[in-house]
Picture 1 (cartoon, one colour):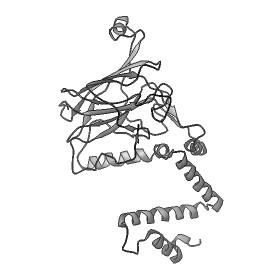
Picture 2: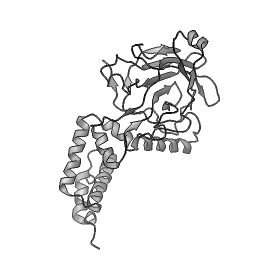
Picture 3: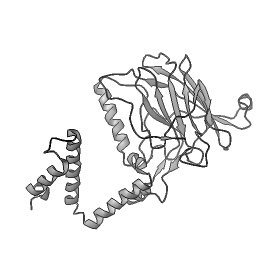
Picture 4: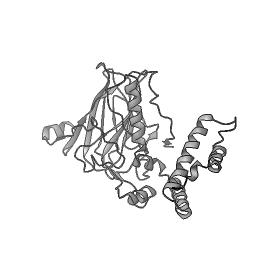
Length: 309
């Protein structure tokens, strides 16, 4: 069996120079990470006998992925965002932090700066026909104490699976709001029940998924950031029970504890009391936050977000 080319002095010297490990300038952590990444790439090329045309095809794919602005969609599709969550879960367990509302992925479609309301809000502007949804709940600490003044930042897709800002047909900040909980830690909002969505069928992410024999569908869901002073920020989402892709999410975001009951009301008196003329859906979901802890990693993730002008 021939010796791996990766282990030769020539390639090892190349990796040392590429990563800058031998010099005193630059960022030492970045150097170590790059050395590992390039080493692993070299090993993959060698182990799978990747040919130059295959490699440059991959480079072209990465270029097209960036040009299509789909990198943020590929990350959850490859399970990387879920892996980051699992690492955070493990770090918190080691710090003695357990229980509370499960976290799950943020996804790529958050828009900063949504309007802020106190206690309650309406997310939709009434222009789209869909099943009306009323959602309410409470934000509490681990001892059951209500957290007043917490911010519940909520966003979700419309009935076609589109998100405002990314879908130019929707009004600014449609289906996006920030809600400050009342003194009892309660929030409530009216919206429309969202639909799931699929990766663009001719997009770069779906192109790769096709090669893997995978679909690119997400179940219907509603995203949340929940934050309050002196508490660990929660990034999570609930899934709409009954969706065909509930346990087959291409982004691997479905977690136990994040599938609340959807109650359908067909009672004429209840419909009339809500000022409606058709049945509606209700969801109740409480968020339980942990106090901030210096022993666990920061839950405020710095990443680029769109801002509606």
